[in-house]
Amino acid sequence: MLAQFSIVPLDKGVSLGKDVAKVLQIIDNSGLPYKLNSMGTVVEGTWDEVIGLIGKCHEETVKSSDRVLTTISIDDRKGMKNRIDGKIESLEKRLNKSLRK
Image 1 (cartoon, rainbow, N blue to C red):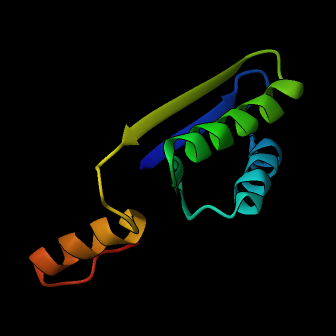
Image 2 (cartoon, helix red, strand yellow):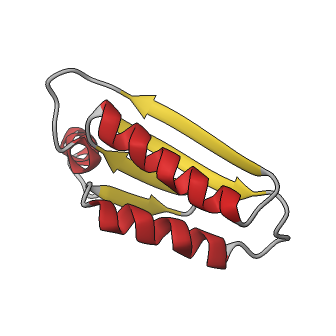
């Protein structure tokens, strides 16, 4: 399963780097495959692993914020693994060229 998620503390102003860094440390320590992008993070694993990780990240952010917006988008395709890279590689193969990452 792939999930893209973002967690935004709504009471921190325009600079969120300190809060994002705390969340990314949790993600990195999880051992799950992930890719960071400018609007969120994509993580791959089982339902329990991914939802558990997102829950930990949300809970960490709530500790220092009065209001937190967590957005999750899930792509669950049976029998598929290594989809973080595999989906991109599939598109590159179809286009016969490398895409910006």
